[in-house]
Structure formats: C-alpha cells, structure tokens
Image (cartoon, rainbow, N blue to C red; front, side, top):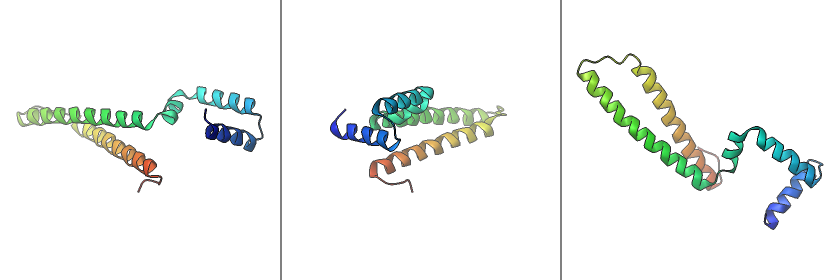
Length: 113
C-alpha cells in the first residue's frame, strides 16, 4: 500500500468513526460476503477490457449461428424459439455496448452519455 492509499484508508476509517483495524475487519468481511461484486470492484481495466473482447468474440460466434439458422429457415426448417433467442442476443449486445460505454466514461473521468 502506497502513502496515498494508506491515507485514503485511514481517512475512510476516521470518517466512519472506526479504528483502522475495525474498519479493515469490517471491509474484509463485507467484501467476502459478495465475491462476485468484490471481483468486479477490484478488476483492473485490463481485465475488464479482456472480458469485453471475450464477449465480442462470443457475439461473433452467435452471428455465425444466426447465419446457420437463416440458411435452415430458407430450406424450410422450423425455429420455434427464434424470436426469444434474437431478443436475448439483442439484450446481451446492448449490455455489452453499455459496459463498453461505462468503461470509456470511467476512463475519461465522466459519466456515460
């Protein structure tokens, strides 16, 4: 922990009217209760970008699958769940776009537009 991080830590403990040890114990317990959120909070920008690129690759694969579905439909096949699948993929794509916008806004020091 560098000097700036230590000051932020001690200032936060003082603000909460807790000793450094109590604040640390409380913070660790809070972080341990929701590991998914904790992992997201401490993820580095590089890790977040890597996950966005992975999601992009997955959406590219889904694009290929949609092409296969279109080919099958043109051959007379039935796809009873196509609308639900298309909505789910659209939602995933919008969430990925929102995540990318939030990352860029955070990187630029502002809120997403």
